[in-house]
Length: 88
Image (tube, rainbow, N blue to C red; front, side, top):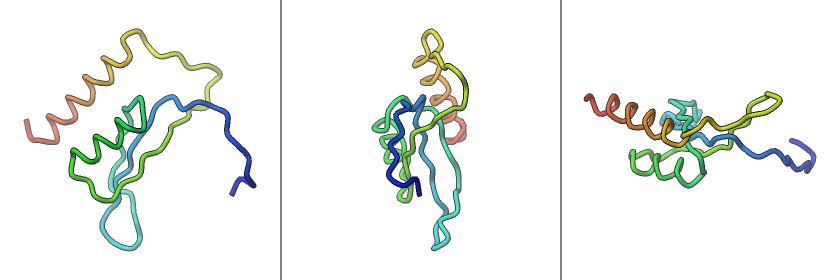
């Protein structure tokens, strides 16, 4: 518990965590490649995940800059992972 402290950092990316079935809520897998909470949630919903959590991601570095065409790189990585997941 953080005692009500507000975190003023901006997330670099967003991720979505999928849980195993059952009461223990063990993490099944995590996907980190989204530039907004909505895109992470859309990925989970379109993938048919029923038990998931979207989370902001922070990295402990002095400064973070998005690479040129960063979104295109993320889209390409996501497309590759989707092809692998579908057995292609």
